[in-house]
Image (cartoon, rainbow, N blue to C red; front, top):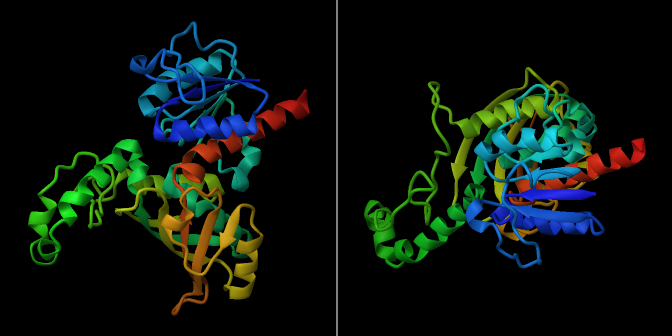
Amino acid sequence: MKLAIVGATGAVGTIMRRLAREAFPSDELVAFASERSAGKTLEDGLVVQPLRDDTIEGFDLALLSAGGGTSREWSPRFAAAGATVVDNSSAFRMDPDVPLIVSEVNGDAVAEARKGIIANPNCTTMVIMLPAKALHDAFGLKAMVCTSFQAAGGAGQKGIDELTGQVGAVGEDVDQLVNDGASAARKVEHSIHANTLAFNVVPLLGSLDDQGYTDEEMKMLNESRKILSIPELEVTPTCVRVPVVVGHSVAVRATFDQEVDLDRALEALSAFPNLVVEQAPTPLEWAGRNETVVGRVRKDLNDPHTLNFFVVGDNLLKGAALNTVQIAELVAARVATSA
């Protein structure tokens, strides 16, 4: 097979190249990035190609992580040239003709790629989906209240750089942090995150709609409904940026049709593919790991149909690059089976 990696020099694209090499060791990989990176030799020996009509011919798979504008322009072109596209942007997620896939949850939906395009979910939605599916199959999911704690890396390498660049200046005067936090926050510039992130949390990610919710929060609602095939699922989202480099966490209050049995819930979570149960997982300790981890699983104090839990996942791995490559593996397996 011949695989294109578009956005190959970015934070996600770099990981995607490594994972694709591991998943498809005998196949040909071609790296694409912006015009300014064209001709650059990457650390794995690939030479970056420019995106042009004459350079995208002959691919079986195209894995895109280069932003919505690039995806909207080039995903249909790759598909028209014969490739199956797996897109990591938000461009096609809610298109009814484009399946939105978490490999362990609804991997069979690769067969529904009528446009030749498959979408990868938002990295925060992704974190929730494995435990949500496990518990939905056991008890019938009705509603979720989700409060996210999202890493700076969710905004890409620029988000990481802005956070780490702020830490020294903001943290040098502890007395100021205690007594004049506003002055400490103004010692640095911010453009990627909505406010100073070092030693802080920022409860605003994305643009606000007329209801006061951000587009990041609405992704959690709309994408959860589509992936789980629960069109009436109630989701109340609040997305918060926290001073973590990599790893999104979400506190979830999930309500079900059936009364919840805690032992049965823990069994369902433990048995689900690539989902680990741990008492109190943290994003730092799970950065760089492929699995999603769920902890603090407990019955609600007021509603016997409700379960509370805390879930963590690496937003660059399962939240982006890993799931993209897993989808590519599903596509390749389906092609091999039908051949």
